[in-house]
Every structure is written in C-alpha cells, then in structure tokens.
Image: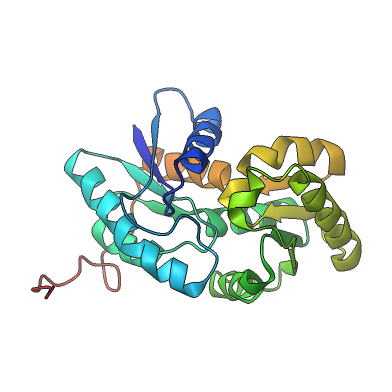
Length: 235
C-alpha cells in the first residue's frame, strides 16, 4: 500500500517532519511518501494562503494517480483542497483537521484545538461545524506563534503547553487537538506532560487513510464527488 502525504506549503523541512510522523504510525507493508508542491506559499496562515496552495495540492494528487498511489493525506489543518481532491483521486483522501477532530471525539466528551495565529481561530470553528463536530469542540486557542517559527523559536513548545493547559481548564475538555501540521512532532511529549490524549492530525489521518484502503473503501462517486466534468481551462 502506498500513501502520499501532501504538505500543502513549500517548506521542505516541515515536509520532512510530517513524513517522519506519518511513517511512525504506518502499518506493515505501507509505504509513506511525503511531498510538497513545487510552487505555493511557504506557510498557510490565511484564506489567501489556503487558496494559493490548492493548485499545488491537486497537482500532487494528479502525479500520485499516475503512479498508483492508494490513498492521500492533506497535511495542513485547514484541509485545503480536500473536497476537490476527493473528486479526482481514485483512493480515499483524508484531511488532518477532519481526522484529528473525529478521532478526538472517540476519546472524550469534548476537545480543544490549540493552533497558531489568532486569525485561524474562526476557520477552525467553521471546520468543526462543517464536519458535524461543533458540539464536541469546546474551544479553539491560538498560541500566537507563526507556523514557520514552530521550527525555530525555542519558546514555541512552552507556548503550546501553556495554551493547552489553559484550554483544558477553561473549556472543560478531555482531549487536545494540535491545530497545525508543524506541531506534529510535539504530540508525544505534550501527551506525557498534560496527562490527556493529544491528537496530531498527521498521525490520525495516516492511520485513517490506511484503514480505509484495508477496508476496500474510497470516496463515493455517486453524486457530488463524481469526477469533475472535463472542460478546457483557459490560461
């Protein structure tokens, strides 16, 4: 089985970390490849960044289809291009926000999301509602750390811990969801320190994508997610 994990931004160091986290949870016989688009934003922190990343995501899906990839993970917490990708991929496509939130709902009465910048809070709430998980999401908390500084700021981890503790206390939640793929490598340490389940969407989505393939399932093409009509695209 081949799973392609797509980091929608073009920061290759983050792609490497994402790939390591995905491979750590993949089952026997599963090959995980992590890729980034050739062109696009270096980080995704706005609706504009999100939109600009989608052509690159779809290009990676198209490349994967040509080489026989079995399933895809979109490794950005905004799940950019997820619905379009489901129209064009033969196998299942899983976004890390949806996977993390759905998994968190198995583990407690409610979860809190700890994310990066304050401007992403509203979109995170929208995602929770769109996935039918609004009543499980107790709060969304921004650390104020830009995505790329998660790799370089020595105080980043402490900020995530502080925000997570505040979320658990303020929201009365049982589970923490990390709201950025760039936080994937913090998951195990945070879980040990906080004493509650901590969900990294990269790991959750990789396991879910693998499970769907093993079950012989893919996105239904009955109506909305049928392949898009072929039409000319003007440059």
